[in-house]
Image (cartoon, rainbow, N blue to C red):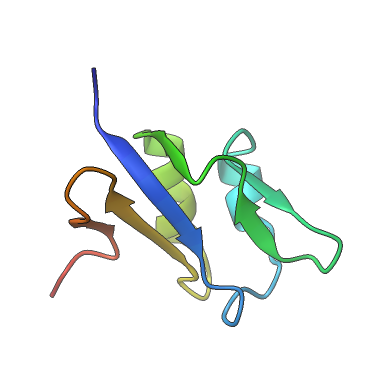
Length: 77
């Protein structure tokens, strides 16, 4: 079994560009206020989810490993 990721969207930062939805439609949705949220906050690790986080124009998406809490994105400096 692969890694599980915990996905969070900082709604105070999200601008509703929908880049995450375009890149990972199974993982993100926009609500009525055009704010992104993960479909499943704890999801199987996947390239599309990472691509969505990396391409968020305001870096509102944070991904950590479910088991350890270790950061996946953004990477620690």
